[in-house]
Amino acid sequence: MEKIQPYNIEHITKVAYSDAFIDIFETEQSSLNEEPWILMPEDEKKIFKRIANSSTHLLKHICENIYRSIETGKDEVFIVNEEKIEMYELESELLKRILKGKGSIRKWIVTWDGKYVIFPYEQKEGKITAVNINHYPNASRYLEESRAILEKRKWFGKTILESGRKWYELWNPIIFNREKLITPEISNRNIFAYDNQNYYCVGKVFSLFLKPYGDIDFNSFNKYILALLNSNVLEFYFKHIASVKQGYYYEYMEKVLERLPIKIPQTDENKKLFDQIVENVDQLLQLAEQTESLKGKIKNFPERYLTTEWSFDKLANMIKAISLSRSSYAISGKSLRTRYLKDLEDKEIFRIVLASTEYVDLYSEEIASYVLEVLKTLNRIAKRELLELKIPAQPHLKSLMDQYRKDKEQIVKNEKAVKELEKQIDDLVYKLYDITHQERRIIEQYLAKF
Image 1 (cartoon, helix red, strand yellow):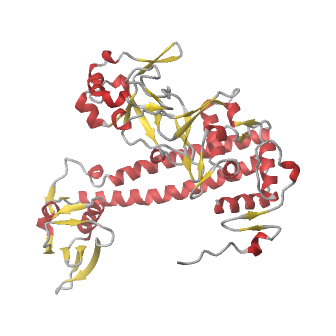
Image 2: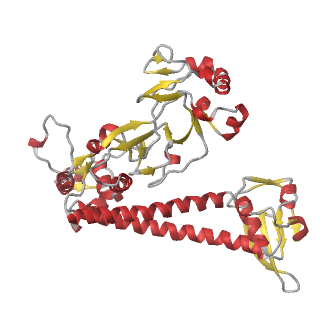
Image 3: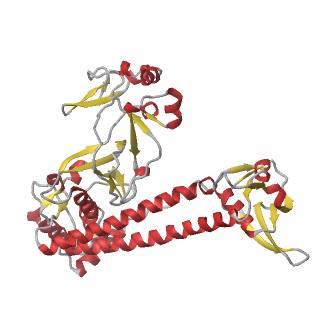
């Protein structure tokens, strides 16, 4: 067995040292008082204090609420898709579109995956009360099928019935139908998104509902705070006060989030920064949303590009040569590839290789490109399905592939533009918090490490 070597003692005896595993630095004993200790090297501490002293509010002072999301206790029952909704004819009044976990939350924007939560509540006079489920016979019938397991759900040691609630209730019902900022509970970096579509949140997600602030437009205020929360400045600050988990993941919990230092513009110069930040966020959100739309379109290739008015032919009628001995083929990045050959008449052949000696030869590069992109969207395809694959007739195929390539190019352009806008936003936030160039380098070096 390999002997584990002790950590190099030379490092530990140094006055100041830092690597991927440890930081060694001096700190004043007087700072180790009854308050929570925040230990960091002196250069980081100066920046940390500068950010705090430059701020005008803590995040909790500008938030009406910071909510952890709805807990159903049985997601497989309460979270439904269109298929299940249609099957049981569930009443629309009880269905809320949801965001669930990190997969639905990107930096800046949210993406909906088509899921709903059954939310058996109504709001009366500012209070959330459970509906009479018998007034919704289809939802009642659906939930009754799982009543036995729903009654056994536990929360802090109590079952749903022991807590005094009805068997079909949720643990912490919250009305989400308003503008908000959202972050996953666990993340390795600041990921805050803007939601103005009234999504409900389920699972490991926190939602920030801001208060109106003075005469500042509320929509612009949300976007401004979003920019601060996604900035290098507040990520640096957050990572010095948050609990770190394995793999440098952090908990974005209410008690930590509410301590983030927010700077609301007071001077004319800072108000100009506010306007510039909001303008950049507006551009960024438009690009990010367009990118997500294009990615969804490409993910559903070729259906999203086809029109029923077009004429089609089978791939089998366009093949020059074939070597397919199997009944079906697994599609993988290693096996699926193309080759360019020439026949005896020096004519180009475009070969699609599915396995070592399994291939289809075509004379048309456009058809070969189309088939290759279709195959990339699949995990497996039967030989019969491949040969019967519908190919749009020219000139529709050419226009389809041209648009497909333009969409992919647009995604690359958008993502590059988003990175540039993020850099510009960071520049503005550094200026807002009076961060010097040297301090900026320290922040960015720290974030590259953590």
